[in-house]
Image (cartoon, rainbow, N blue to C red):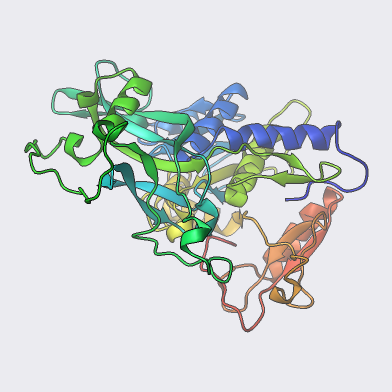
Length: 439
């Protein structure tokens, strides 16, 4: 991602904004952390957190700043304008919080020739060869037994008389690695690096404790002959005890108090400025934490003391969805009830709901592909977005992107008011367009 051109970037508003994004993305290795980080920014800006299922309509007075989360991985925040009434339109910026990564399997315990391995599943459309030979940390959320009550029902549940809490975890050290095979054992690797995602893409956690400073293993031992049978709600037999012990230590709980988890691997290399003039941001997860960060910052700025709403009369809203990388069809994805329920509650009658829809506008903000100097033929000749060339509007006649003349015109006018520039993007006819959230 390019952020400027010309002299070296060391100060000024662009430098401050770039560093603010770096802080955001470095704090957000998973969708759960991204939503948590966004929530902290909204809290600091005076937004009121509510439970989605609560009677939050009672707070719909002029100037109200409200947000809620769903499943800890999606977020909806909005402001109530002056003169709000049922039937008002909603101006929405939609982004997504997820990125391609590797996710720990429900039964991850694997071992082979003396190594402890962790079974993972690929998530989204990743460039998987880039995950080899990297220092990988582990992050996500863990469900634990709880004696207290969280302030939000989104991360706190009661099952019978027992209470459980979903807590975020981040192990920020080189815990896992997927090593490539030595070139001496695969001389043709530089001709074509191919690997099997199932059998040759398994992270190594460590060595089996009993094999340290001992004889080498010569047999695979993926199964445990003396495995004890546990209850159906227990997961202790599904993962290496050493991994569960580490998770428990990080969470300050006993291993048996870990009920379940959703954990993801991430690259420990921090995001940073790069290039001879600091004109680039070198970072993972820019698709789509750049847009997510910008949406949060824009909504906060819109209610700052020195800002005037440009869409007076409309409710300003941001929707940060999960699972865009796999089709958006989950309960926290873009095709969920998150936005429809929100609009229905703002305008509950059929007439007011129809009026609200007719006045509303949504921008799906995601990343675009700047032309690559080594692969210029991958872009359509007249639709090659340039670094620092301005905001990109994506169009597709087959409606893989939903941009139309009216929507594109309105976006151009908004950008023009800010003194910005606009670029157009369409794919080549001999290339397919991924079905995504873009609008």
